[in-house]
Image (cartoon, rainbow, N blue to C red; front, side):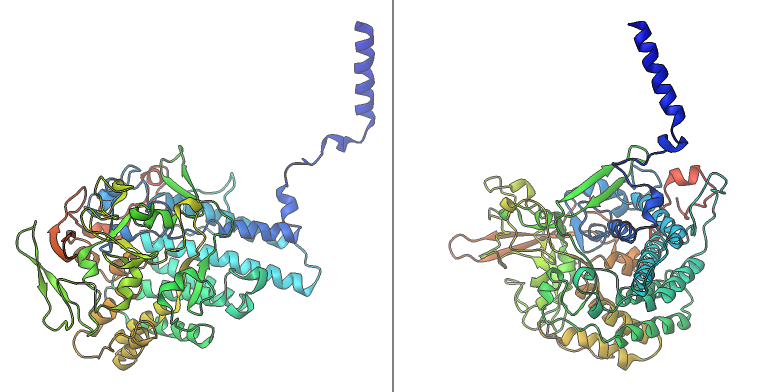
Length: 580
């Protein structure tokens, strides 16, 4: 037996030594090597597609990504208050406990940038065999450079200047890359976008399997956003108007594409990526829900996958969580049909506040406060008695959509009197499963009309500024009275932007770049309690100062920029932002 085994081993050794030396250099059958990716156009395109999945969106489960409304004056996030209180009450520090939901973005962004740099360093290995392939590689390269510019623009909008890393590290690299200035980072973003815009398709060319891919309009929109942040008071305290001129010119370039029009269907823009107003969007086709990732290596929240926004924002009477509750003082900003803000503030007992009614707000009825209002209120906010899924919502005490213990899912009932309606797919039912299929809209034409109006104001062209604000207000489906250039025109532009883009993720950026956040985000929350008379159905409204877990707000000056994660500071020579 021993001799037989020895002969067998000798035979195997002979065979192995007799074979080509490459016999052990076999490719795995269940994986694709990195070298294989860069010589196969299909694999290259799959690599790019996976980079799209890294783009953050505003339908994340919690407050990461672009879902910022709960840390602004728009709404109160009743399911996250205990995690957001450090931000909303002015107590941010750079540690993971206080920035759990937010500083994961720093790490995710630089991971995405690394993946984009890998593409840019390797794409030259592919040799196109036709003009069509060469054009495709050029387009895919432009998409990758857009995404890198996108992440850098998001980073500097949150942190100020950051390290500009345009190549991957190796063992011999210097890892102590200093922060570049905000100006230099902006210049990099703009340069990248200017170079790639010619190589991206127009909206009407991104059809078929290319529908949903990045376009010229998206790149131009990102350029406008970057230039606007650079021109605004947060980063332009001396109001250098040449920066606003660049903003205006970039807007005009976008308009000159003639690819987009204002929608006449404000309510459903956010459900229809084919709407002529939509410029950039993210699709969630065949994606189940989301994936919440707690990386033990960094202790921050990381988000992946699809979304459950319908479940998270539906009223509890239909099985939802109604997570973010619009604040009463934000709801008050929606004008009456006469074009006036109906409630100018509150006074008196904090438990029974009295609204200060604007005498110019014709048609406003304090006993029926939601009628005769800007149509965008009912399109954007879930409020008492509004039609929803074939019934009228019952936000009153004891109603189906209240926190009365006798109603279904009462523990998810509102705490302020409202919910967010904008973007909801009202055909959704809890029995359908939790996943949502509607797209997330990053950019639409209205935003850039309002940006153009703001730029023209700063350039002294008030008539043009008024014209573009009124395009927004007068379009079918909204039909609000026009504004004039009299009075505080900048305040009117800011107000229109706040209402038009409510709950879309813009407010956190806008109030900060205007340096208005220290006032607007520091206002304590007002809520409404509604009682219904069972005999006649009449409602009474009690307004009160909501304290709850985090109803009291504060926004110190250092909160205009986020702290760089403490882990990054400790392992490098990066300079921390002031106040942290």
